[in-house]
Length: 526
Image (tube, rainbow, N blue to C red; front, side, top):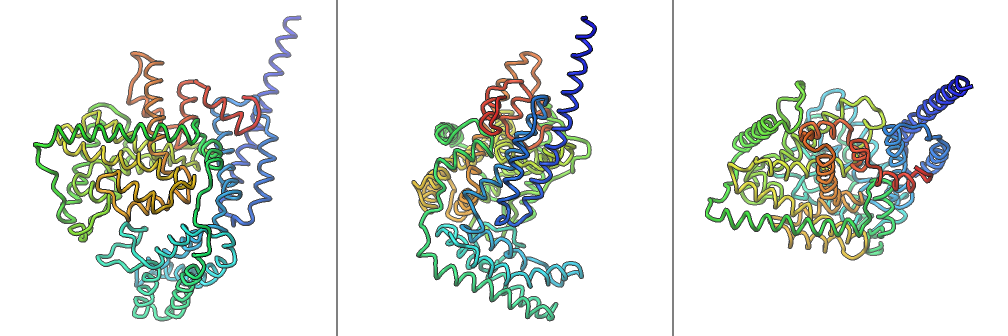
């Protein structure tokens, strides 16, 4: 009798395993469909989104492993992001920048162009009038803050850059870039001048169309706290609501300022950091900074740098001759010392992080880019490496690290206040300029534009950092003397750029956060 019961249990376990495999295979198919749906015109996504939700709800996840449940939440979050765009953000109806950013980079092409680039340029120029005509038909609910930003970018250089080719004297806005392109084409590819002039006329027409209507548009782009809470929960998979984020952000902002004040007082007898004077010096400083970063990572075994890692990474902040008279916030820091931004944006930050993600073999995670994880990691590295001693030989450089953290902390209230309707973009910018050393209007506008269009993204730098620091503490307590910081970082990074709440569950087994997220997002018992 016992043998029969044992055999029955084996058969049942096998059946559950096969069922789970079939179900997870369907999850992979759903994920591929969600990724493909990102490429579809948002105005036509409603029916496919409803169908995908039905398929997600029909999955039997009862036999899933921990890793498979994590992947399930990731697919739900991808679906949630598209659903949120469809229900709340509606960029094709509300956001004039949505269409501007489909055409603004076309003039950045180098001329004379190669045959392939020339064919792409010709097609792109011919598309511009149709795209901007469609914009005028589609923008049925435009909001003034986003329209004013579009007008600004059409008419003016923002002092920061939107991935334009470098110019000592950059053209003024997208309109200026199209005029510049038409002038270059007149000598290098005259057969495209008429297409360029038609595109340039369409761009000017778009500016004029927005300018004539902006005063009648709603004055706020706020989505409201209720929507922001849903987004943080269902898309960011964050275990905090808006009130939690504000409380944590306020605490960190003042802690960073405290550290900055103490450092500045301690270092007041030391000479100020000198600004870099030319491109060669800036490149030299950047390479020495990377050597210093790699050396301390190796000396303290802070993480594994694979053998096939690039020998060096680019910087986010390039030299400009205008630096002698005007510098935006990041240039003020980077041209005094190259460590902070290179740590965050290059190694071991974003570029190194992306290099590792490309080595993943999990398709669900390869196509996931969580801001809290990505920016939280970059921001965590800044203070972690300060604590590890990277500025011990240059104490004044440490002040710059805390200025950067003050800036990242200031974003939380600025972003949240814009989306609650408490502040306009201009007021949020004034708040950051008032609170942050070296902060100025152009970089503030550049940041806040992103946070208006991608809610929660400004807060995630500090909130992600807090989550990682908590995870380090929990894992060190869990493992005791067996805890190894370098091994922790390696295990953290190998899971992909996914929400930290999910990484925490995988690394520690603690399911308190994920259990609540699962029940809210998936809508069934954990």
